Image (cartoon, rainbow, N blue to C red; front, side, top):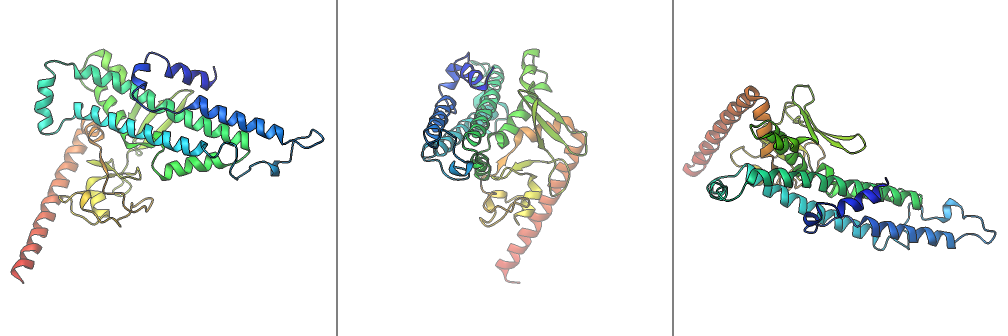
Length: 330
């Protein structure tokens, strides 16, 4: 079955009520735009009935038939999908790992509603939602390059990656994967274990990875090693550029103290890997990933916790001593 038919069935299947609330790729409509471009090419054949040379096509140039709306529309859709996905995943995470006042509110809520069932059902739907739309974007861009004999679709993928709209590289997808694996490792009922069917995680190798299995035997791997300390990420944060680091390592790279946090970093601070500036202010605290590492490697997690606390106490002491000297004047 062609992907267009699979995507149509997905949009009008059992999850239609769920998808009505969210944006999705207008795959069918964008494909019609490419078909109209093909018809336009047919009209521009030479007088002797031969097809024009490749140089006459829109190779590496804008196409007057479809580019007026094609990439703009696709960028808007990708932005909306990323926004919908991140907001819903954050909602699920608050149900599973609540903070402070949320704990008391959720205990009251659980008297009337089964939040575990909500987590499992919506988690499964969100995994399928992000993967189906990501595949749709890849397919339509590949189709674009085939029709136009260009590399504009490939360049657009690079642009999406640069603007952090590569859906399958979202830190929230890693968090959702960690959430599913945490369910699999908990004492919940057997029906909840099915939640983690798309994700695998191996923390016992030199290169710790989380793997997302996609249809057609496609798999994506997310490296869980901090590029600074070269160990499992501990108390991990994902910068806006998508790169993962331990909190203490990221604070060191941003020249701020651990107790100050990444939000105290300068706007000019750059990612140690890609050198992009301004990526610390909106860093995502990966609570589910930290919980996954804690459950699967308790000794390592306790050792790193003790080391981070000791470093935090040391930095705090040095900071307040320097402040006291500045105020007193010696």
